[in-house]
Length: 111
Image (cartoon, rainbow, N blue to C red; front, top):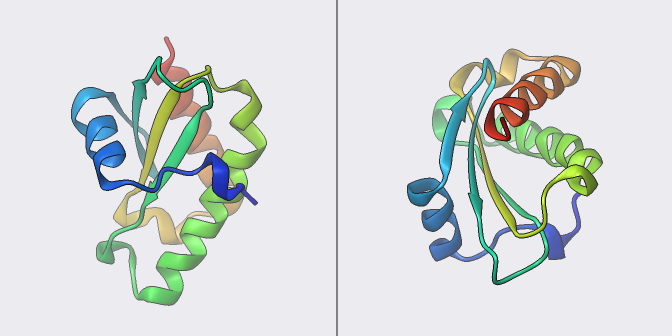
C-alpha cells in the first residue's frame, strides 16, 4: 500500500498538478504529472469520481491504483507530483490491465 507520506493531501497540490502539469491519457487512467523542485519526494494523489461507480467500486479501484503506484514509486523522479484519475471504465479493468494502463501513461508522461 502507498504510505501516507507519499500521498498528496492538500487541495492546492492537486490543483497545481492538474492545471500546471502534463496531462496524459491511457485506457483506464488519466495522469497529470507536475515537477515541484521544492520537495525532493515524489507525491501521488488519486481521483476516482462517481462516474466510476458506487462507493464500494470507487474505493476498490482507488486501493488497486494505490497498490500499483506503490510498486512504481521508487522509479518516479524526485519532486514529481502525480494525480492519477480513474476513467469511468476503470471499474471493469483487472488489476493487471490497470497496471498496464498506468505504465503506458507513465511512459508517455516522461517521454
